[in-house]
Image (cartoon, rainbow, N blue to C red; front, side, top):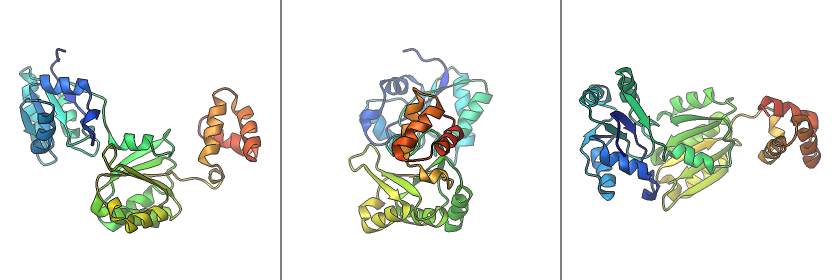
Length: 280
């Protein structure tokens, strides 16, 4: 594969090294330079795959200045790859300012698909995935967390957060305080790694489990919260909505609502109205 001059956005494994793509390895071998969030951390990964490409550090503290130097390299005909410590660059990781400046300078930015903790966790969560909002890390201070969560309280989308081990209990307490003890959540820990676990249920129950088991306070964590339900929507379980969606693949919404209502003992008009609201 011959690379064109461009900035390549290359995702790396979030745990299991087998998740790196053959294309990612090929690009990392062929570019002139790899910009790493942490050269020492990424050096171990690159060494594992026998990649000897020159590295440079690009992190939150030097990104704006380093971007101009990388643009100069592109101007000399050198291709550059951007990687973070794990997962897809720019997703709660450095890279935004670099990509923005490279594009403004007229150079191509080529993204590669690959691992992302938020999307990987969401796919196995059992929470609605048709609409979601990735919110990154919650603020470290309690007031900031509560303000942020209160602003999201009535958001109907599934909410996704990253969290660190030493703050997980505090963040779960803030979610319970702002969204209510009964808000359904899923906590994914160490996704793709040996001790991968998923805890699900009302946030109050998950919080107690995490408090009781110190092992649940270790590793990389993705928190996912069910979106806000209106009073009318709250009577519909996930199973009811999934059945309605499945029926709508073969039938008009009105007929699908009548059948689903008959199956679950729910008024068909309420189901029909909800179906319209969610775009079925």
